[in-house]
Structures are given as structure tokens and as C-alpha cells.
Image (cartoon, rainbow, N blue to C red; front, side):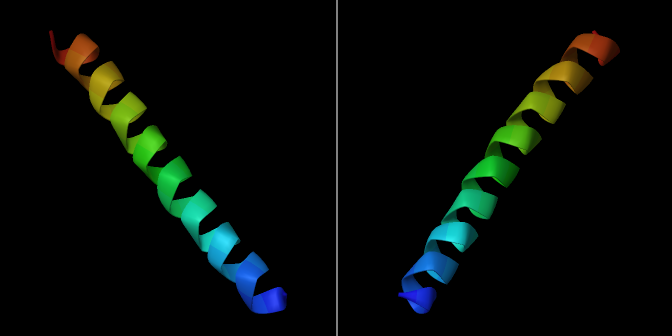
Length: 33
């Protein structure tokens, strides 16, 4: 079970990082015009 939880945590980090990168790119685009 611990291995499964570790994989899920990894997926959550990857997905969260992708969303954060997307938001950062959008805000940077708006700032730069």
C-alpha cells in the first residue's frame, strides 16, 4: 500500500507542478503584454 501511495503522491506533484507552470506562464504573458 505504501508503494501505491508514493506513486499517487508523485502524480499529484507532477500534476500540481504542471498547473503551477501553466498559471505562471499566463501571468508572465499578461505582465509582459
